[in-house]
Length: 199
Image (cartoon, rainbow, N blue to C red; front, side, top):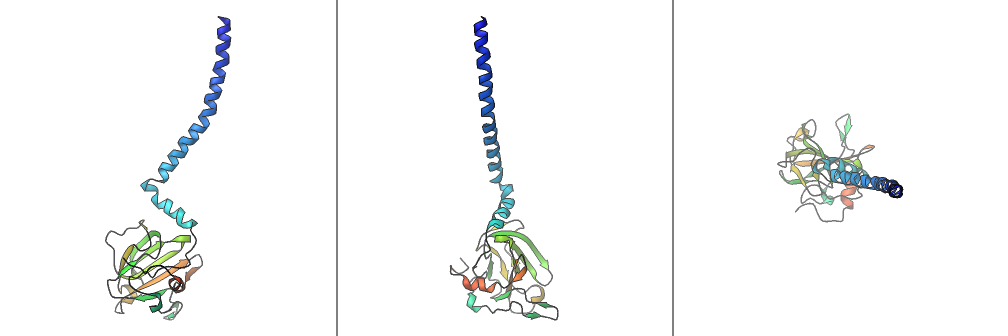
């Protein structure tokens, strides 16, 4: 009987060591599965999109965000005087009232508002955390919501004359704001070699 006890006492520590050795990797695998499951869940879509956008480089070319308009038809008015104390911080893209305004690239809708100079407007956070400003809209796409993830070509709203553009020909005021502030978006539109914006 003492021999069996000695044998059992040698097996038990060995089994405990194996269990202890396996426990770490098993717990690590379970934690990784939990994180992956949470990361892919619907509620994590916004933080995941923000992380993805922040890691993307700023685009070198973008499609015109107004359906059917070509870049060569857009005047470069960036930096032009606007009154005594400000300059134009974007470009005006003229089109018929109600023409679809589409997201120029992938992004996250961070604000939808009405008021101020821009009237009805949408702000989209894009690659490299640049902000895209769509202003003077006639209206927004039905169901458009803050926190919505959009792709290039997603309809945001429709060309209009809201805000300080009231009574002017309908147009989209479109601007891009990088880390250093607004910069001229027209060179990006002119560099676009892909398909035109639209269906």
